[in-house]
Amino acid sequence: MSFPNHRPRRLRTTPAMRRLTAENRLAPADLILPAFIREGLTEPSPISSMPGVVQHTTESLKRAAAEAVELGVGGVMLFGVPAVRDAQGTASLDPEGVLNKAIRDVKAEVGDDLVIMGDVCLDEFTDHGHCGVLDSEGYVDNDATLEIYGRMAVAQADAGAHVLGPSGMMDGQIAVIRQALEESGHKNTAVLAYAAKYASAFYGPFREAVDSQLKGDRRTYQMDAANRREAILEVELDLEEGADMVMVKPAMSYLDILADVAAMSPVPVSAYQISGEYAMIEAAAANGWIDRRGAITESVLGIKRAGADTVLTYWASELAGWLKES
Ligand code: PBG
Image 1 (tube, rainbow, N blue to C red):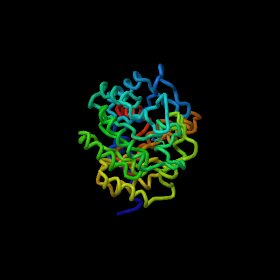
Image 2: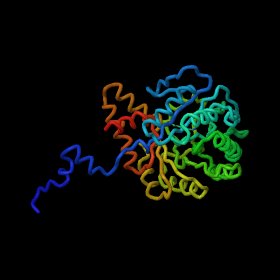
Image 3: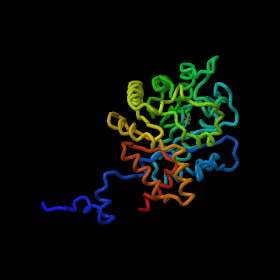
Image 4: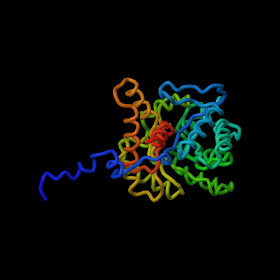
């Protein structure tokens, strides 16, 4: 063979050639739209640190879910913002509470055409903002929290959730939730385990989105950013406990973790492109510093390429629309 041989470049010559030879593709069905609903709102309320994302009313949430179905989006992950909070996060258990009601409303709107997921965590419901209840020293009490998670899971399954997403990083949460589901006759309700969830500065805008009461941090229960091997332990434990799918979160600063998990997981792997990742790209684009559509598409493709089967992203519906038109 004579050199230079233009082998790599030959496959980049035209858009059709690049499309044909692409190793990874984005599809609407791989995308999961996280959505917030706030109790007592009469109009959708913008989240200033997440331009384009709102706290929904019941009506606007139903419309967003119907639109997601139209666009072929794979699923929706619901977060509730209650009007009243207490130390135990009691509103999370109320069948008429904001999140359980939202699950029921979305189910009535879209049925089984969209995979409906609920956030199983107490941070939106507690007046101290932690993901669990506190002991007398203010430490997040793992086992007392598990007991509430089990009941919360049943309430969401009763409301019609197809998938539960425990995001609180308590040890043993998958086992407790699986057992509670079995005992309450919800054998087909799946669990998407937030298996490797790191304590991250990039959750900042989410705190505004859910009106978080948290002072301090979650470092005694979420993972340390320094740790890679430990993610495998977290995933293995969740699999042993019965996780149907596992998640790595955040996504973009943790693509090594995502690749590791994708290489070992026998179940589907999700990655969550979180609020801070969204905010950074929106802010840079708003300043004219990066091309918005290009950056969004590339960021989600990068997450898929690293090994995610599904991606939770606040751009799910917009991106699905672009994918449909191209
Ligand atoms: C906890 C939860 C958080 C997010 C999803 N679930 C916040 C946290 O762990 O502090 C963050 C998602 C995002 O930043 O987009 N229920």
